[in-house]
Length: 111
Image 1: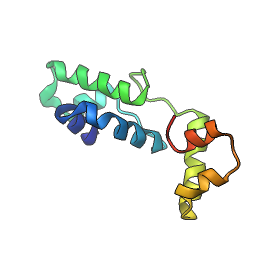
Image 2 (image 1 turned 30 degrees about the vertical axis):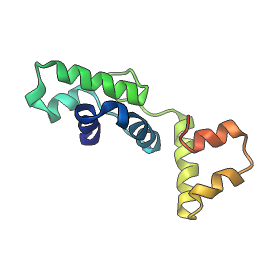
Image 3 (image 1 turned 45 degrees about the vertical axis):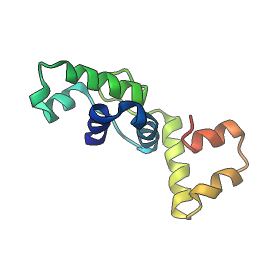
Image 4 (image 1 turned 45 degrees about the horizontal axis):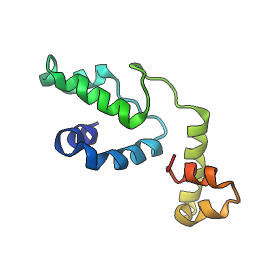
């Protein structure tokens, strides 16, 4: 959460893509509006809390205000990437899986 807030206040445009990649690689991640308020009480009552929350929604593509489980597709991506990572083949192994290009892009966190 601190990295997201840091990027928000420093250079939001430069940090969007890296944050999206990190978000796609985390199995269970969610930042609710309540968590933001609890973590940064000094910002309560300012426009920053809502703006940061909207920024997080832009990064994650998740519009919900409350935590919900990730979809099965995401968990499958995490499982495949974890297996390849344990075998030290994450960077070269995706291309050798024999899956369609669209699935390779998904596994490479491009989608």
